[in-house]
Structures are given as structure tokens and as C-alpha cells.
Image (cartoon, rainbow, N blue to C red; front, side, top):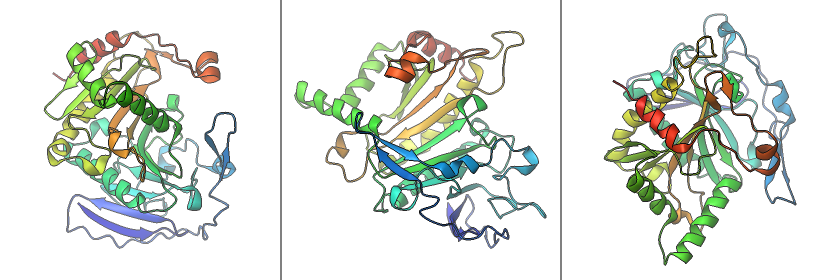
Length: 356
């Protein structure tokens, strides 16, 4: 992997990640953007006294690009007369600072990851080499953001599909460097500490994975280095958690064997998600399955960091062909989920959707 750093017209950092070492990157952003001003584009963090969490107030995001036509996509390579966020005419994988960040400066960092220059592609359609490059990029960015004083935790994720709320169709993901430990991770660490105390030192994540493997009904894939399963109390209609067989706190600690096997495992999972609704209802909304996929990593500089287990969670809001799972009163108002699809049935359907 070759990494080349440059700057966009407004001073934001952009990084090219190439599979070939002989690629030369000398392009310049020719747009007239003007320098980015902080804290104007950094937003504001406000603490919720009742719940104890933080909310980012980021009014500048109202101006972000919203469903542009394909010929005006800001994530495609630049063309003569049509400069984009990526000055080069082609690329493998690119990372750049978000122009409309939720967090920036003293409140963290937000980055965009473009997986491919092909506007009509998807992560599921990447080659194993390109998927391995993306994994290397996620790892590199986690390592780099760990050095920023404002960043406590890194979340690498992809939102796909209008149903999820994506405003740019080009295949891309994001990386958030949070200035705090997220509520979801804090809750996991609390549960892990309680489990350790009640079981004489056992690890909650290890026990969860082993319980699923022993039961087997919710296991979707079980390979030499990875286990994927629908959780026993899944919140979403189709939800899969992917764990390396050897517990590690973050992407930096993955061994070579797990890295080598990851592209085949992850691409297979994504392709199964695209197949689960195929042909269910004539005339129903089809197309690729909308999903959210993200890496859960241990926070930096945390006393219980070693107890956390790196894992990836992927879920879709589609509960059947043409029908979505909306977060209504119970979910949105009280954070109590009601799932219409039994986890065992979801796992069975995902196993049936295996590649031939």
C-alpha cells in the first residue's frame, strides 16, 4: 500500500491509498474554496444533563450536498471542467476531511472514505484486493487519529441507501474521531465489567461468541479466523455481528491471518445482504439492500480497553421486500426495540443466501 498526502483548496487533508507502489500523485485542487474557518465548521458539543450523553450541534451541515445527479457527484474523480473533492482523474481508495463535519478541531474529526472511483459500484462488488486495501486504510486512519489529543474513540462505518439517509450515492464510508467515549461503547464496557465480576473474571465478549457458536442456530459464517452471527436479542430485522476468533481491542491488533481472510468473509456477508430480499414480492422496491456497517473499537486511553472486543456490526432497516423498519414511539421515545423478524429466522435466511 502506498500513501500520498496532499491538501485540498481550503486546507483540508486528502490522502490517496494505492495498491501499487509506483503510482505518482501530483494533482492539485484547482477550485476556489477559500480557507476553511474553525470553529465555524466545527460545530458545538452540548451535554445532556438527564441522559449524560453529548449532542453535536452542527448547523453548517444544512448546506451539505444532497442527492446530486451522477454527473455532479463530488466523490467521483475530477474531470476537465468538473473538479470534485478528489483532484485526481482516477484513484484506488481516498480519504479526506469532511467538508461538513459533525466534529472538527477541538471536538474531534470526521473523514470521508471513497472505496472506488466507480460511481455505480458498491462495496460488495469490490475485488478481494480492494477490500483488503480498505481494511488497511481503516487501520491506518485508526492509528493516525489515535494521536490526536481531541480523539478518544474511532468509528469506521458505511451508510448505504436512501432508506438509511445517505445523501451521496457514490460508494463511500466515513470515519468519526469522537472526543468522548460513545454511549453505546460505554454501556458495553459497563456490562463487560459486571460480567467479569459475576463470573469470576470471564470476558463478556468471549462468552457471547462462544455461546453463539455452541448454539449454532444464529451463526451465519464460521471460518478459521472469523465468526458471524445474528445476535440473540437482535434489534434490527437483519443484523449480523462479525468477530475475529482471537479477541483484540481494535483494528491495529488484528493478526495477519485474520486480515488475509477478512475480505472473503466480509464480501460474502455483504453479498448475502443483497440477496435476502431478491424475488420476494413482484413489483416491490428492490435494488441493493440498504445497510449500516461499522467497526466497534475500544476507546483510546481507557482503563478497561483490554476487556473490549473489536467487532463489526451490520444491519438493514428493510424488514421485508418493500417494507422498512421505522423507529417509532417505543424505539425513538424509550430506546426499547421491537423486532419483527426472529433472529433465528434471519440467520437461516442469510445462510440460504450463500454464494453458489
